[in-house]
Image (cartoon, rainbow, N blue to C red; front, side, top):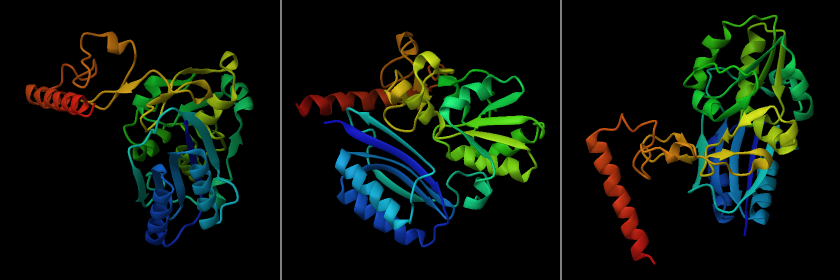
Length: 294
């Protein structure tokens, strides 16, 4: 039976976070749903996975509990396995950390561009196309002509944006849209005139636009066991290195520096002997447990 995966977020004032955390954890756990949900005073952001009826029940519960008519963004896909190890309900000061509060009123001031109009926008040479994700995510895949800000965490984005021309058209995108909400809010406060955001993020684009018409190159990194997604949100070809936790492509797995559960080309020359021995021991234990459970 296939597992349904739903990602969502809503910018909305939320209070009594600890109470909601407990209620959500109890309901989702009883529904046998796994994933991660972030609660903050400015909204909710999450991805959950489980059997179809259970996931739908949980989505309806979340909408009812937080008085949500529609999510600001929602993505849906199916997979052959459970992409999460467990359920986590976390409380954060911000849905995405940037040191800037976001309210529903503020977020409506910039323009949302649907996938079908996105291609036309980013083909315009006068538009600055910005990938509002980490360099590692950019490396796996991005849009044609997109800029990689090269920041290690989201809190560093303000320093990058300060270098941009406020009169230029800005087109931003991220995985599902939530990071763009924060970035657009920052730019609005700094006086940028034209800010455009890909509605529903990369996931909505990949699920909507045909591959033959797509300006997306590569795969989209995601933070679960699937690691990366291709068009129509089909799981991609990357896996995570056990040593350095970075994505490893099919090509990289053919390298002599790739040793399953031990190393990859990204970390092969950086690993200490002690670390390699530790990983080797863990690999042997894994094999032993697998053999004895048969």
